[in-house]
Length: 162
View 1: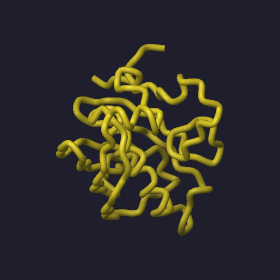
View 2 (view 1 turned 90 degrees about the vertical axis):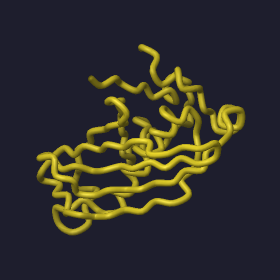
View 3 (view 1 turned 180 degrees about the vertical axis):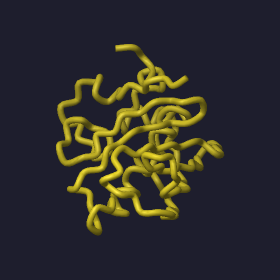
C-alpha cells in the first residue's frame, strides 16, 4: 500500500520555489509527485514531445534528471535530511518511447552512513519493462545545516495530511 508524499516545499508558501524536478510552479519542469511504496519512493510521469531526443524517444538527459530527482526524494524522506548528488551512474537498457505513455520511477535506499547515502533507481515503461537504472551517491548534510541553509522542513512535513 502506497502513501502519498506531500511536497513540503509547496506548503511552506515559498513564492520562489521553482525546482525543475518537482515544483508545479515550473512550467518547463518535470513537476513530479511522489509516493512511498514500502521501502521505495515512486513516481509516475507522462513523457511529452518536448522531452524528445530521437523521434518518439525520451531524451537520455531527461531520463537522468527524472532519476536524480527521484533519488533525491529518497534522501529527503528516508534519510531524513537533504544532500547533494556527488555521482550518478546510469545504464540505459531500452529506448523509452514517448508514444507508449506513462512511465514509472522507483528508487530505494541501499546504504547510508553519517555522511553518504547510496540510492538505486529504475525507470519502467508502461508495460513494466526496465528501461534504465541509476546508482546515485549523495553527500548528506547534517540536519541542522539542512534546515538552516537548505530549507529542509523535517521529515514529518512530507507525510502530513493536507
